[in-house]
Length: 314
Image (cartoon, rainbow, N blue to C red; front, side, top):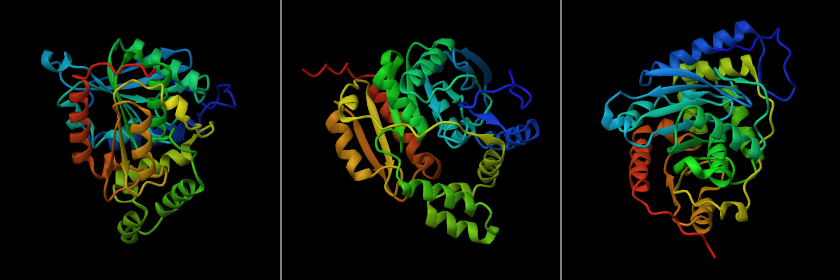
């Protein structure tokens, strides 16, 4: 696998590791979290115009499974595909699953060019799916990965059978309350062990009570420097162009978006879109309500596979 080291000359507008030692320490923390989920059947690197994309594949070689439209998972900012550990077993029992490490975030991908611009992001993901030989996929994105998935449905929908957005970016401008929550959560990772369950409940933050997830988050902050602005939200006109079957799943106490506002707005703008709220959760419904969210996602993918194309609006 290609590696980027601190001795190499790097662009100032792409993500990078602070040092080789911290990168390897972060990888070890990621591997401990991967071990909580389904074992990967294979790993591969896909070369794109923007760098090397590292991909994990889950699922068996059962022809019945491989004949079904696969699932592609895109993680949130500041993380890697290890965050999908509560979901890989359930999803890969029904479909082949590919989990992508996004270039520009800590993970095993190696970024050479920025991809935060909408057109570049869509081109990167298109090249990655093509490099994997995937003509049709169910795309799932969480947080920043939700923006990447929504952006793909807007600009490069040709390979998409459906899109599932888990408390995604791209619907509203990221407000101060979200950044305060992020910093408070990071600060709370240093709290005494006895206080973490109470803080986790108050902050709606599962990172604090899953030791492996907490260790990965702390290692990430030390090891990697993200170099990109927050993505701009799609306008009403841009959302109205989406024709891919779309499922929006929000935490009732999300601080990234206003859930009630978006469950009304998105189906109004996107024909046939489904939007739901998960109670008793915030920004990570697929982690702290994994069984419920896994069932909902698989049911949506099954229904999306039988949907007729949504006609263009006049």
